[in-house]
Image 1 (tube, rainbow, N blue to C red):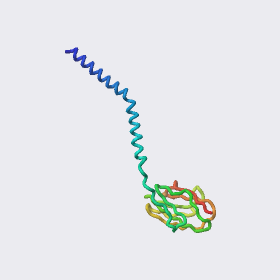
Image 2: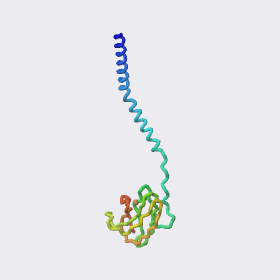
Image 3: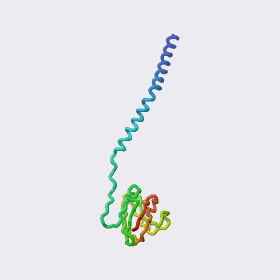
Image 4: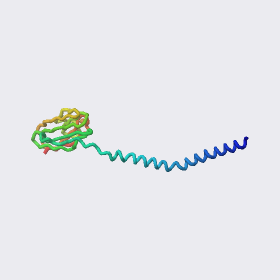
Length: 153
Ligand SMILES: [Cu+2]
């Protein structure tokens, strides 16, 4: 009785060892498969069509149109006519409020025009007094990373 049991145990241990060895040898290929699956998973999301950006088209009522989307202005360069009043329309396509203020320098410490804040989904027309020729700077005062230059000429 003892010997057959011992043999059976030996066979079991051997099988277990074999199974482990088998797993160890097979460990590399499944990893590659997993990587392949990951990249295959990533491409459908990359191919998904992005929703069209909201429109930013002039209706002819303003001199300069600026739009916001995803907390960015549609432009980082705007231009005014020197010595003439400027109607600047701000179209806010975000949920956050934005404004446009004009500054003398890129340190944004001397505002020469401070635009009212425009709530998300709203728009406003700013009436900016005539400015002298030169380079100025604009920013959204809530999100100073939203900035750019104003060339008056
Ligand atoms: Cu803002």
